[in-house]
Amino acid sequence: MYMWITLKKIPVAFCFCLSLCGLMQCGGGSDGGSNDDDSGKETVEVSSNITVDTKWVSSNIYHVTGFIDINAELTIEPGTKVIFDTDAALGTGNLGSILAVGTSDKRIVFTSAKEGVSTPAVNDWDRLVVGGSVVSKLVYCDIRYALCVLLDGGNNITVDHCRITYCKTGIQAGESNNGFTLTNNQFWKNTVPVEIRAGNSIGSTNIFHNPDNPSEKNTNQFIKVYEYLTYVDIATNWGVTEVPFCLPGAEVEVTGTLTLASGVVIKGTTGSRITISGTGSIANRTNAFFTSYKDDTKGGDSNNDGNATSPAVGDWLGIYDGSAWVTSHGSWLLYSTN
Image (cartoon, rainbow, N blue to C red; front, side, top):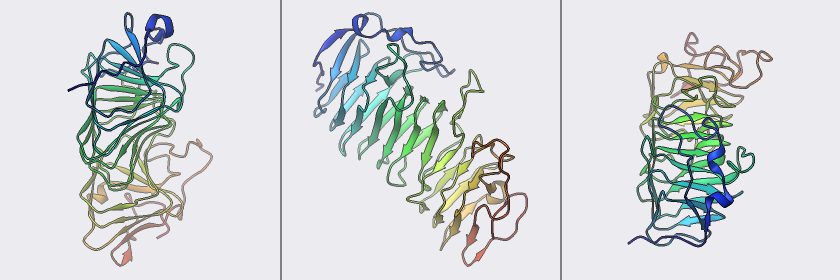
């Protein structure tokens, strides 16, 4: 059984002229077209929690006005648009799920209510939270102008063929090394495209630029490894080579297996170290690069200072393997203290 949330309907032509925004501002990218022709649609205001299975349809625009908890199954049809007021958010509880599965020509859009009305900006609305113990999917979605998309505590989350743009943090991993799947996504015009926990996997099918305009990237063109939960205790794969992984100024402990793709760049900051403990291992490490966050020759200008700083020995601590520091400095291990 589905519940149709219809608290208040307002003709779109009267309230929102969302189709006025340009292609690049409204998604762009070559992974399917934009979905911003809202003529004839009505706006449905959503201001209460979702407690029964609910379906949102493409003939409406859903206007989220506060923090909405999803405690049932929310299905969103291909071609549907969801707009958010300032500080508004949509998030799953432990037993809630979002099934937002669009298609290449009927993408689902999550965006600021300002888009097409005034000037939208990064962090216009709060966040989309996807987690819990139930399967959730974001497929062929355009998500823009949010604080972040938070993947929190679930092992059943798929994010595939999404374009995440103009967000403060595109994807932010929650408080666990959860097994979400990120594939075929585009990240550009975000402050930080992706923030992971050390035990999160991310593969090479994700890109960090606008494929239709490769000069459009992210303000901080790296994957941030969050400073808490800095351990790898499960089989983990870091497969992205387009941008580096930037370590926090803390220890990252590897007790499981961290597998690196050839050409992966890992950058350490002041206080960063990698400790391999017990049965832990880093596979293919000599075909990757471990270097300083000031090293612009590997993975670009990660600290965004142009030529103002240069890397030097001692910029980060290094790799401690079992009972000793790795000292075979060379083409793959650079600028560490040890």
